Amino acid sequence: MLAQAAAASQAPAFKGYQPTEDEWEALHIAAWLHDCGKVTTPEYVVDKATKLETLNDRIHEIRTRFEVLKRDAWIDYWQGVAQGADEQPLADLREASLAALDEDFAFIARCNLGSEAMAEEDLQRLRSLAQRTWSRTLDDRLGVSWEENRRQARTPAPILPVNEPLLADKPEHLFERAESELIPAENPWGFKLDVPRYKYNRGELYNLSIARGTLTREERYIINHHMVQTIMMLSHLPFPGHLDSVAEIAGGHHEKMDGSGYPKRLKREEMSLPARMMAIADIFEALTAADRPYKKAKSLSEALNIMATMSHEAHIDPELFALFINEGVYMQYALRFLDPQQIDSVDSASLLHKAGLTA
Image 1 (tube, rainbow, N blue to C red):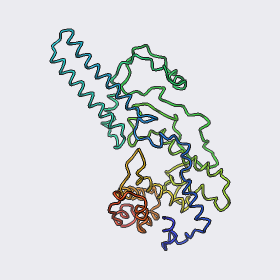
Image 2 (image 1 turned 135 degrees about the horizontal axis):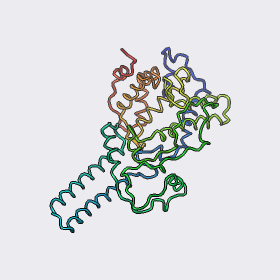
Image 3 (image 1 turned 180 degrees about the vertical axis):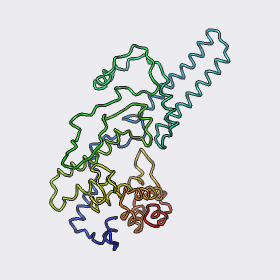
Image 4 (image 1 turned 90 degrees about the horizontal axis):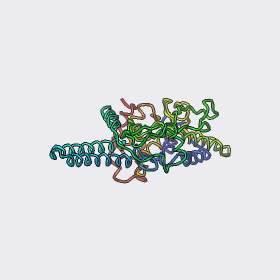
């Protein structure tokens, strides 16, 4: 839709854009294949809806520890009664302990959702809660995989029972990255990547402390790496000559106009017009999609306001964003693919002003 609007436009930025039949075919194929590299991305990372989610949500493990501490509060109460202490102060202390544990778990559960940015005071509270301990009496090295046992072997087995942090960052939470997975700095594709030291960091406090969203730095790298895989896959396919541009068009939709994107850190002038179109289409579809477990679909006005900010910050092509708005491409798409409840009023003039495209 955006390419059709550009081809029909008389604006100076698009006047020379008149795709041939072969170029339309290349754009069509690139659009279908733009995320083909995601077949290599673990599904739980792509769909990670909470900070502690892996194949299961580990908030359940933490809830169980809180249940243990609540049982301990009752045990302390009954032991005090059995020893002849005054019952009322013991009951008051028990109820205060139970209420505090309920409140602390509710706070950790909210942190796990990742729906809001973490304030510094929230991070401090998390770190404080992590220092509280619970007593483990069972060997946690029994019944687990040989790989986990190998990671656990980095530290000596403790003598049981052992007091452990309520929120743990353990050595076995760190997964080493295989040398074979590293891409040399000098590579034929021009990838420029900041590679985290570890492949995964499953630390509980580490994950709960994610400042925004649900992904750790390690998981964000894995998500970003799907573009590397897309480009590598497409560059190895034996496309006929008129489809040589497919990899370039498909592989640029996470680049930013200021050169801060990935995987090649390309700037606007280093990208073709169709590749810059793909970025706008991909972002708009992602913001308004209703099938993502890690977020709710945005309304039309919410999505476009986010994109206006991205245009102003040189993340997406401003001239293409103006075309997207002025030619009503967003509404053309919305009427076909969005839930009617998502389609709200849009102030085009305000959006263009926010994007820095009008005075």
